[in-house]
Image (cartoon, rainbow, N blue to C red; front, side, top):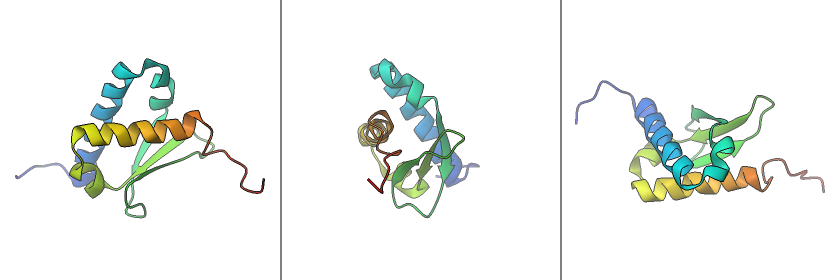
Length: 95
């Protein structure tokens, strides 16, 4: 397949479509989902969330994102949302 888009752009579009699907299925989580700032990174093997002062950063490996079936991507995105909802990204590691 020949496309004018980079893997990073394709992965971001795929994630954005997944976010829309989750917003429809889980409206309670919509506020968290709309805060996701997407950032492609080869430093992560899959997908992960961080909480810098500016919001919620969703780091993703484009190759991983593009390898997933739609249902599995939705499950991974929901998993990351739940990290935010349950406060797992703001835990004080010293405690």
